[in-house]
Image 1: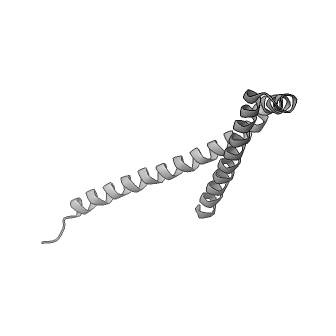
Image 2: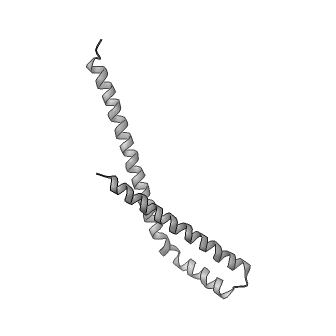
Image 3: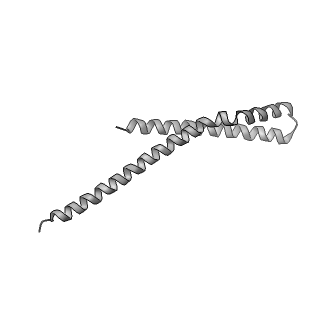
Length: 100
């Protein structure tokens, strides 16, 4: 027995809906990466004053354990930020290279 057209059409419509949904997910993923990258790009200017003040306090108070700890934490966060920004850039560029 052959498959009736209506059955085939139902399956084709289901496939089209799933492909469309998955395409939207990929677009949303790309947009999330682009938004994260933009936000990461804004962080340095948003926190430049606070970072400069922490650096100044660390330099002025090298014997103060609290300021030394704050400086060390800042250094770790800056390194993590730089790695995350590079990762976001690489992911966005990789996705752009795949986009027809």
